[in-house]
Image 1: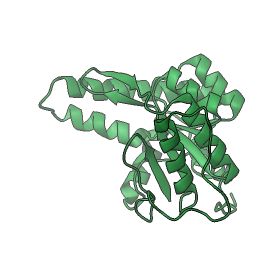
Image 2: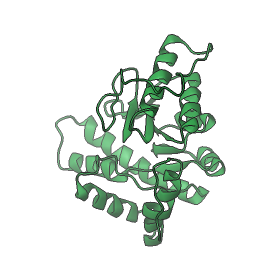
Image 3: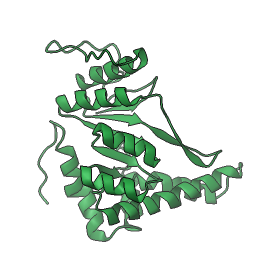
Image 4: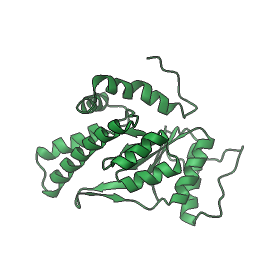
Length: 239
């Protein structure tokens, strides 16, 4: 299951909302006098999810504004809260990924010790090199971005939306190319709920526009297997 995205409000897992779920009797929620009340609420909410049927925590650190046509960092989750979330997840052998577009948001995630960055559309060379050095995976989720761009080309009412979608798609392709050159490991993910097989197929096709066939296969098999090894529920995969 996935618990996310983590924001000030919202969030769910496969078993429904984890807010209010009974605490694990073996330990107590993380307490850190350095956290603000909001930071503590986020960290404790993550803690609650870790004691449910949750394999991964997803934290939103930036988003793309289609009207302004640029990425916007979300500072609702402070560095202190992010560190606390990653530390607690690591203690329970779980993955923490972030949805981040900008180098600054990705840099915050790397410093906190997250395992993967989703999308990473405006990744730069310095940050890509740092991701590679720290072993942080990139999950491009290209199919979602490409689909938005294709839909926009078919016609949108607001003139700014098609331009924004195309800009985001072009940036995502460049980011993937840059990540590959820097040696960042690419893992497979479509940002769908997994029930629509066409989304998975489209992700393969989207990745194949940038990566070699062998790179695509590696992303979908060994790289994703290695990322999932962080979780206690991951099973061996023979390739």
